[in-house]
Length: 598
Image 1 (cartoon, rainbow, N blue to C red):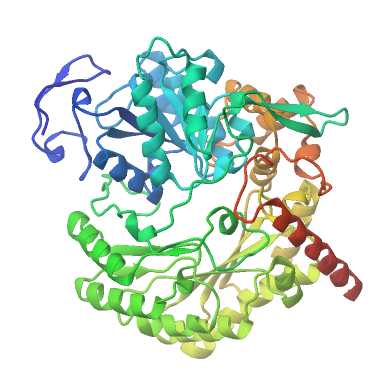
Image 2 (image 1 turned 180 degrees about the vertical axis):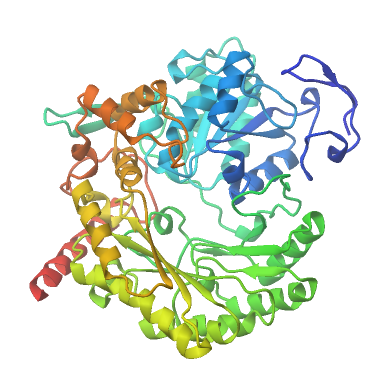
């Protein structure tokens, strides 16, 4: 309950005292509003994409709940669509939080969740609209602290000029520490902004402050050295890691949006990390070690969330849900509890093993959705190359059992452009999709609807493929045409990811600080919401790269020697560079064998 009125910074009026969030027009169910004068500090979770995507992100709900329980006022803001951005600028209204209409530059801390490199221009939009100086070096001692975390922080250099501090690793233990340390130093006239940032970076080993590290370049354009400029900050950054996942409470009263979002459902993270070590996968590296929640914790949290929201779907989240150690027990318990309530249990990220054929029976007679699987590739030797061993028989047996129990649709995720890829690998994608469609006909009398979604492979930092080059535009155009030509069944739909988007992702993922100038220039020329096809303008980006004389293939398509200093080498991950280099070496041996066998 609020005892004093709040000011609406958009209209200037005083907001009435409210008893519950539901009594305030515009507030979604389970939002939290606090009087800023009574809290430790104020934090705005800034999601650099639209509300529809941001409110579907489980991590935002987790940190929102955690920080509000920690004594802070935690609020939310999202990237506005272009028409709203235009209106804000025309009326000189700053971008504000949804809870109390507070401008972003009035918060103590603003935290960006970097989920996808293509959204980097949105970070600049939100900073600028929020009245925060775009460049970190231009902010004064008590200006809003700008921090960032998430998968995009694994190569922080593209955003280094704009972010004060990157949090590497798990956000639940690290975010409260950073916020509390910053709040303790607020208003201290003896400390400069640099002093404050140094104190935080020196207190932990997972906080990266870019201003304290210089990139020294060699004559050939590669990085000669990453040089630390202060002795009181860590030479290398290690991830913050939660040891016991059950010790971190799940958000059991998540915010319920008023509008449809990308994932309109309850999300429960059952496991963090992955027992497998696929060479292409960044998540399996940066989310180590493997940690679980108990069945009891998951079921109780799901039931409490259902009571607090009324959602009719619950998603069990992890990188590989069917690898949860008590998977059958968990799915059986969830089905027993929620099927009578008419609540659907969603199982994303299923691994193709013999367990797959048991899943339809475990889910009993609830509402049937589509079956989503990620074979990634279709040939055995390519599976060995990417280190994702699966058996086609398990896949086909699982699909057949699903069709017997009422499923009619299957979605398969594949990649093209992997190291050593051959036409036979592309043939296998279509053959696998059509085989599953025919299994549907054998079981039900009708071809199953199968969607083969094909993404363009981008080598990611902190994976064994980080030294590999990305395929070029001509190759991807050829591969997509080739795939489409192979499809014979009308019930099989082939969807290929945007080539231009993937090429941009390649340079934003693998670039260094020099590429930040192109990011800023593209944003100034109008780059907005680049992950959305209706807003993405690839010509704008390529013209910026040309005008700035930037060698795009140098960053994205060049194969790098293992001894080369990479832009993210000072950001350490579990097992480290030595392990990745060994895996890269094994990959080269296997690629040579594959080429010799053709």
